[in-house]
Image 1 (cartoon, rainbow, N blue to C red):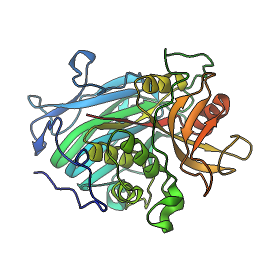
Image 2 (cartoon, helix red, strand yellow; image 1 turned 60 degrees about the vertical axis):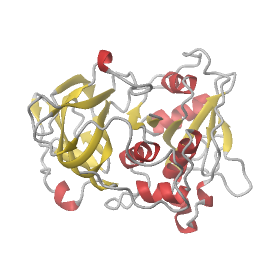
Image 3 (tube, rainbow, N blue to C red; image 1 turned 45 degrees about the vertical axis):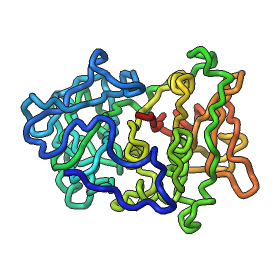
Image 4 (spheres, rainbow, N blue to C red; image 1 turned 90 degrees about the horizontal axis):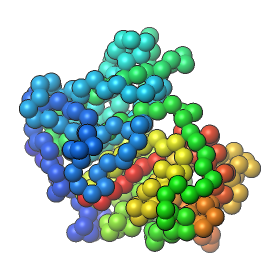
Length: 357
């Protein structure tokens, strides 16, 4: 069963929408499992980000298991974020291997038609309070300083579920580099259109939509121009009442672009440079206190999304910052060391990868 998307105000470019690409599964989940994608099996341009902190899954129609992935063993981690792409009616869950035992499954997200959301109250209540993990909106966090060493994902429902991916990481897994790691990244500036969140077509939400504004800039760069308001409505998490839920924004980007998108923990700018060298802008999540970030449009933030569009010849970071005030430029240069602090030390090193089909 496929669910048609809602009408998008202002017209939908023919390059945008739902469908197309690889329709891996349509229908119930009773006859396949999700398995990790091996390097040799990757197909399609730009369909995978190579990282020890990232696992992409795909369905195996001949495998047993009601939508449950294989048990995936990875390096120790204390946080995990699940990304998905698809439409229909799905509940998306994950459990972790902690201290040699599996935790209960925790609901990390759901798809209701084309609406993506975090767990509702009833779904959240299924995770016992004494469990060694807890859910913080869109992130599964291991409690009490423990570490997980594996995970399983379960998808229950029906519809068109095209992709699942997990970023599994330690928050302190980071490295600062002050030399170019990828040829051609320093000195590259991608022509990403600029837009400010306060210019959103609904001024009442202008202060809340840095994430969909950033996604909208990247979509337009890839040939899918949509109003900020339309991206915001599509990405809105009605349970958390947020426009900035990470997986909801990634799922929205994949659907509207007819491409691939995921939330990824990066360890440093060398990984961002790989994307810029491939001519793909990156949406970056960070936070800062007063005095942390020179040239910032506001003095502090508990969480903000920007678009990395390139690097100067000296390695400083060129961004489109949607928080720019009226009369100010969206395009800014942030000092490499300062942005590393706000992204990796104040924040968690999270980005959205958005790839065209």
